[in-house]
Length: 159
Image 1 (cartoon, rainbow, N blue to C red):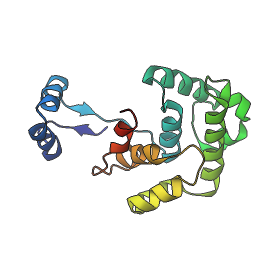
Image 2: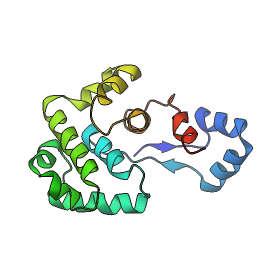
Image 3: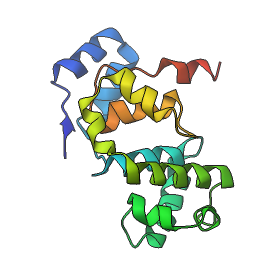
Image 4: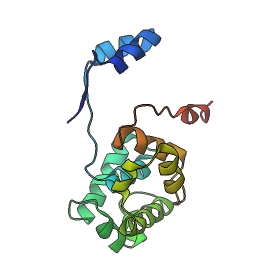
């Protein structure tokens, strides 16, 4: 599991630029970064947790994992009716988004997105219902490890 060390150049740069972030980072310490093994699971996770607390998102994802026999993979999600996905605790719209993502992932190799530039990944993913710039940024940042992504638009919408 990757660990972001406080001594890393990236962490040092952030701490030099923002004293509040420096105090927070020093209080928290090194961070373990966990990511799903599959691109599909990463995107599904973002769809599920979008606009929800992490605790609620985890509970919904656990129920979906139970339906999928503990593997959140495209063919298992695609076999589920959107109503069954919805019954895990999400809206019908999100259930349909997950179903559409699963069908897409059966045809297109999401893992191959690692070989594409950021704009191409975003352009392709945003063709899917329910996937906007924020989910693309989260995917680029946390799954593909593109450290130069800063989803500033997310903060602007809340002002």
